[in-house]
Length: 515
Image (cartoon, rainbow, N blue to C red; front, side, top):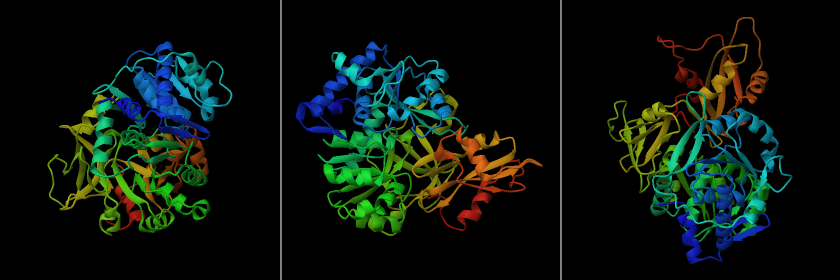
């Protein structure tokens, strides 16, 4: 299987169908295919060799869609950059996987000089915005206009499609290697399992397109003959306008976005009855938010997806009917057609139903490994099973309930934050003696990044000072939103910080330590 096949099929069947809408720009399947073939040719003129990584640091757009197809068409590997990262994190990812061609838009053009300085392997910058082109960059539209279309390299199967960076337990992002087969397996298996997106529908992209969740939804839309309406970033007003104007039928959102949309005055005054499907993930949705969302989107059916980047990304789905059950709505659903899901104990032996263990997943959608990190790959994938780091149990009907995180990770507003990344940044402050970072409940973001800090003797620092110090080292969404200063941290006999003890005062005696 190869990702570009979705476009070839669409061109054979419906060349005049609208494929993308972005602002005032509308492209048909045929127009999109021609531009993608030309962009692929342009990449080759820039020196792209088979397997080379090509990055994109940009907000959502129709050009992002073209990038996702043109890079493999030219024989390359995509590297979508997290737009919320700090310059230090961005540079690390580009250097780590030796990205030598980078697309940037207006929002990030000002960072080009810094990236050129910090990423010596960058050979070419392609400006995919509409404003003033950065010095030394080549213009996207000029490349497309000046280059003849080339034949699809037909990169597919076990060939690497992309390197997708996620947080790291060591404090550095790690690149997840996903093949064409992995992504196609996940997308096909998901649409076979449930009607995740409407066939021939109109899919809204307001979640960031660098994120694998939106790429998965995009690919499902490509497989089911959908059109793609794209807005630069999520904002309730822009989402409402796009839904009404373009008759949107489906959207991918995270619970925080659903809450913001349901509570927005724009949505209250709009007719959103055409929306038939909402796919969401990252965390369960609260009953209160779900009911407000159903009132705002009266004809929408809600589907929850559980997974991770390493799983390409979907492992389980909770059906719309499951959302009407007061017990099942707290689950993340059952395994999709392409995934085998089991709950293992510490010896990788399956536990009995109802017993908490680690959620493990096997299938052709599992990653090839972490880029240049064989040791971490060996820890994560054992015996063919991806060990998710999530603690949970499975009931007698196969529904999976997440109750804890074995790995030290926080999910806030749909973004993964590894505690080690925040702790490493805090530890660099001269006043910090020790620190521990945990996730605590938050009504708006699901979980909040919370730091517990021991200051050095006779040193002083405020919560604001520590947050501002970390701002230059890590992304804003990773910054501690709250800080507690203590005299000492609870320690085990082996000298390990007992984070479970720190969490108890926030999570209490609940049966879940996650949102």
